[in-house]
Amino acid sequence: MTEITSLQRVRHPEKANRPDNPIQRKPAWIRVKAPVSKTYNETRELMRGLNLTTVCEEASCPNIGECWSKKHATMMIMGEICTRACAFCNVSTGKPNALDPFEPTNVATAVKTLGLNHIVITSVDRDDLADGGAQHFADVIKAIREAAPTTTIEILTPDFLKKSGALEIVVAAKPDVFNHNLETVPKLYTTVRPGARYYHSLRLLDRVKELDPTIFTKSGLMVGLGEEKDEIMQVMDDMRVADIDFITIGQYLQPTVKHHAIDRFVTPDEFSVLEKQAYAKGFLMVSASPLTRSSHHAGEDFAKLKAARDKIEGVK
Image 1 (cartoon, rainbow, N blue to C red):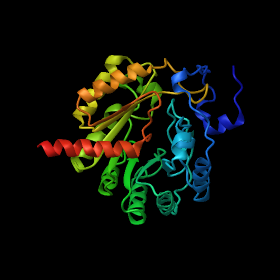
Image 2: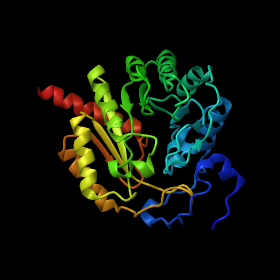
Image 3: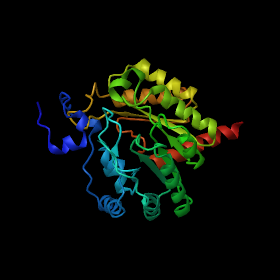
Image 4: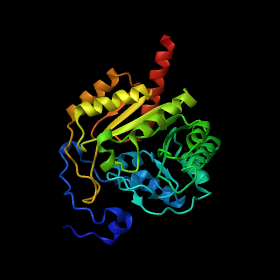
């Protein structure tokens, strides 16, 4: 058995006693270059200086070099410790610290300094908070609106499970895009996303549209976890019933030997087929490729998403 380092024990204590799942060698189409650009380092130093956390680092995103070199970063609010223990995720699990009251201002400062046209704000799960962190999301959105009024805001939220009224607080803050990832097919929830409930997450996104039809909704899937093709099609259909506008589909990459094993690497050609099928089901925007992630190319995709809706509304 592979030796577990002290860093791994601290970061993922709940995974320490799990059997090892050897990490497979990545195929050529999914390898990325190490980040080395000057702009990458400048972006990193800005995040450090403002005491901000990014999901780019915490979740070991393969696109960090590309995004940070363009001064794009996905802010992860409410700390770096999650109360959930999803089998696919590399974010630390444990007891979170208290919320930072200066975080909304610091996030807004970073957005303004970077000159972003579009920003993605995500968070760890905060089951320890009465509202799951909903008001903190709203405070961050408000701070960004004040500091950078022309910046469009996309949020990627937890599921606010058993947090009555939380969703309404976030929707009232009027983000431009409300994203919540279903992550995988229903049969895999107990092993891949044990703290979540598939139909609750689906209903969350459906409820956003009921509360404010002008907000774009978005959700994502990972593939390569052991799902079948017909199960992916069913999730797409479920999303469309919930009137979700935008779907992202990307390859699951195993962070460590203690995380869920990769079932297989899905080929670029298979992703192309999934993209065509998703558009055929009525999504306004689809991003499907091995390296697709929820916030990858989010600004460019938002422009396309808005144009697609404007085109449809212009036809009516």
